[in-house]
Image (cartoon, rainbow, N blue to C red; front, top):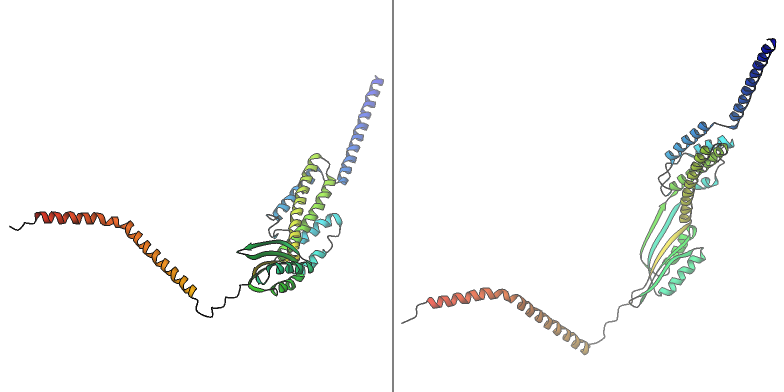
Length: 321
């Protein structure tokens, strides 16, 4: 009996020890998880909130003015969570004090020799660091005509344009200057914010522990990188358009001087002129006769009725005895 009671006490003691060990292990794992980062639900909630904010700030397309982009201060706050000091000043933004202007001019130019002027414009553009964007050369009514479009650095734009004007007689000129500074500034701020979001998602991806977390964070990361490519592409395009100005030139030969009047009478010319006038008179008479012939059938019915009426009247008229 005593042995049985002793065995029961030993069993109870073993259960107590096992329960204590299990509780200690659970507490240890919980502490390790808390130190490692947020739980699955917390991480997914962070991603969901961040995605909602990104969609609220995202512009309709990379080609539009990015006025919906978050302010640059938001990007610094996001970076501060992972870098501790925010973003350093961007030299690119410091340079935005200079205006970003897309310049273009179209010139209609009369020249003595189209071919020579064509080559001269190409030489001037290349000498100033530009290049030929498009060209066309043709003969119309035995006259040479050329169209030429050159792209030159914005700093040499006025010099090249002045050289082109000096090559001939300008009959028409139109210029256009499109200021894209505001759009460029907004795109630069948008790009900084997207790059900060990319770093945030990379940090969250490193904390993900389940397949669901990895897939959700990777999807958001891919979306942000796609937006970065779109905005960066638009920035690159604006850089290209503002760094180089466009000059389009239409070349045509100058009008030939009028022929000198004849010094004396020209009998042959007078005879030829009289012959032409007689032919014109004959053509007029023939046209009039044709019109009369075509429309004369309208006179047949009334003429026939008049003739029948006259015969009827004459038949009823009493004859003299």
